[in-house]
Image (cartoon, rainbow over all chains, first blue to last red; front, side, top):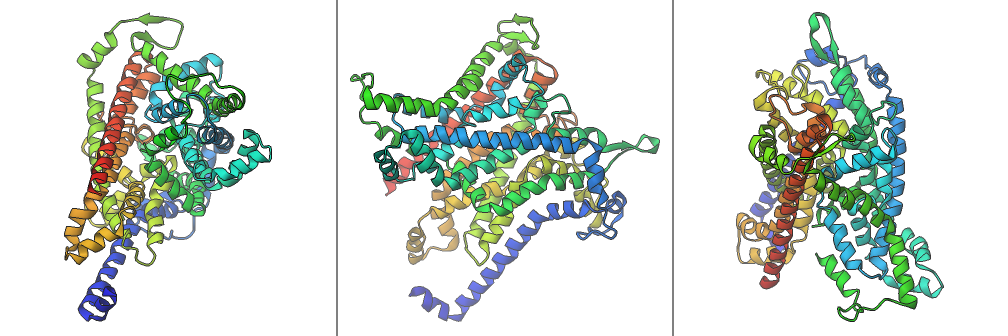
Length: 300
Length: 317
């Protein structure tokens, strides 16, 4: 009621409109800052190097002719098709194993009663504090002993063992929101815990699985540390590992007079290509993306 | 925290002193319980507890990954404290980086969250847009940063050129290299914003309404209601942000590898170099354990503060 009266008085309405306008101006300004580097990348990927050097205004619509061959040139400069294949194998296997094992473990902690459950879950939470750099050296030595270096295994197998405390926590939180009456009904129908997990829990935790798979995907897609340590043979390299070498060697051509010049348009076309899957997933699954961040953000 | 106490109450039958081995139905449930968490137990032993113990032992050795392993006592610790300039330098770089990134990110994300919390038409679109850089940050984006900071062709120098400023040698000059990383990191401020926004939305509206009725101005509302109630979120972001900035690796390794003149030698970057370039596993373990202790300290601080705040709020109510 109070608001209606206020809206009727004109100075207040004037202020309100002004404020709304200001909101939009600021929001659009921030939006431009956020989107500009990406637009610069997309447009630069279709320009020649000379255009980037000489243009006096930044043309977000690249001048004709568009240099589509930048994409092919950059992609074929190293064996990126091979790297993409390796990355896909590792990513798919990690997502699958991570979802399967983390949901099993989460179900165990959320629904089953066993001796030491609280203590073990406390340990699960505690492991989130351990930076992976602490375990990196012994883990490396272990994989070295096993003869797993230069295979996909060091990057996949750990994900099949719960996939990390974060995923277990995320899924457990979600499972706990599912009413236990469903479990009880299934139990009366003669379901074992395995049956409950398969027929009651799994079909009902879709959103949490979606959020977890996004993070699992991003982890495998962007991981540089793991491939750097475990993969020395370039047949097994992932995209991230390949891009590192691309950055260090091929993007710096030696021109006449020994000048080092960046093939900057290649950077942009390769960056565009490797970012597109991430961008696509973000645009399609934005809701799960943000909810996952918020859940993880509130994990403390 | 809340989750742990929930789990506590779910187990009323296990009182201390009356512990008996479970039988029958309970035994079956125990079996299933351990069956379901067995992947985690296996992973915990193989990839966490085991390695943690091994690296604890490695701290007292010199080891390059071959057969020969030498016990050196406390020599690694002595080196860390007395002789290692790179270690001191990397700690400084990481601290400066963490301080600027986290404090600036919190201020900016707070402003952005306050803006979006006005719920004007299209605020969800803007939220999606502001979060976009955080979503696409990763190895591809790092690659693009390399291009953007490039001296001749890069976006930043293009912009400077348009406005007739002198170009800046972003990643290749001692004074600008670290600030470049801070800019890079701040581009992903949407991550902070999303959490800040969740914190803002958890503040009950009636508090603001009540204060408005009492005639509080916008600034007073912010100062006396929003900020105090948001402080747990802010401190959470501070701690998590610091932990995150301490672990910067990919960007550093891809772009500058510590240079120029070690001005961007982040702690984890240095750790990687000692471990896997110089192959000094013993000394690297000392560095790794120090990182672990710092992160554990920050996490415990967060837990302690969170508990104090919960207490404080319940007293108020």
